[in-house]
Length: 473
Image (cartoon, rainbow, N blue to C red; front, side):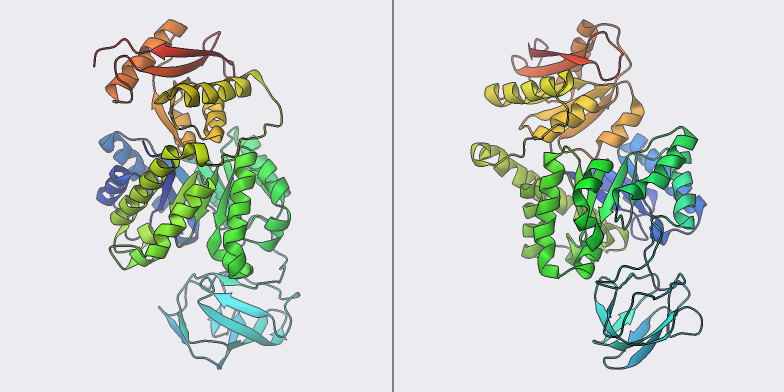
């Protein structure tokens, strides 16, 4: 079973039921809805409904990730279909009667002459020639290009006074809560406290959806440790990060972020331009294959497709390609595991659960069991086990259907729903039957089983057993 998770972004190329089902069959674990490109709540509701229909049709369970826009500065929606830019020409940027209109009004207090402006992940660069007024800049184009509506605008090295969450984000957040999505990504996180507004809304609603912090600003790098501690997971948004900071720093930062997440037991996603050439071509470049492999070797939990599946010509093929790369890299890591440096997580507090997980990992490696079966109510045991990166597949068996979507982000964890059982013997029997049915174990093989006694109490894992399969092949 593939252990690295795949996130696919929906868009014009992949918003119909047939394609969504194909994406799931190709190996998608989480479906991402980018709220930057969605204007109506009804569109999101329809997408979520299609995803749930496809889950039933394909007999798979995926997570749903709502990616909030955040205070991202974008080109306005209502510009012509494309705006051609010529090198060395001057252009006005701001709101109102300007050549490059922005979607929001910004006061350019911190922008100076000679500041740089980059549009569309740095594809078009400008130099600030002058400030016409507090809300309008005159820019000189440094290269030819074409600007499309809603493309991102960056001011590298300039810390603009922007809120951590916008009015649209608040609406989208409430919609995500209503639709019971599995993950929410907060864009342009700069400080650990940026999640406070979201937590207040969760408290009011009575729900608590896991939050991913998107790392794409220099301030986030400066505050990385506290952000990793505060959030439920991290997304390395290499597009904006590579515009805001020197490109040559991005692979170094990627490795640093992944290592910190692994060490602290937080899931981490590597994103942006992973198979960019497959937006137009049916096969990737060698460099893209190496990029994905490198992220997996680094220890990423998940790899994400953006434009490749949202607007590309080969959305399903992109997922199939990514899955194939992951499987081959994981096979090599497993084959050479004695030479592979693992990041053993450093838990803030050693508990019975973390100790059981550590023991399960060590025993599994020593006797080469194919599976660690985890009976879980809250998902805590499965999450902790994922941090150890065992060669065995982690099979989380839970009476909590909602948990399946949340755990879909965690490396190596595959979740199955089973109705609550009253005794450990019943749970073990059900686990064995499930593993045999799924072809994950054979008669005579051993697997590791963990559970909690008394049954049905969340966070009570205190039992570990090495069980030999007695079922029929």
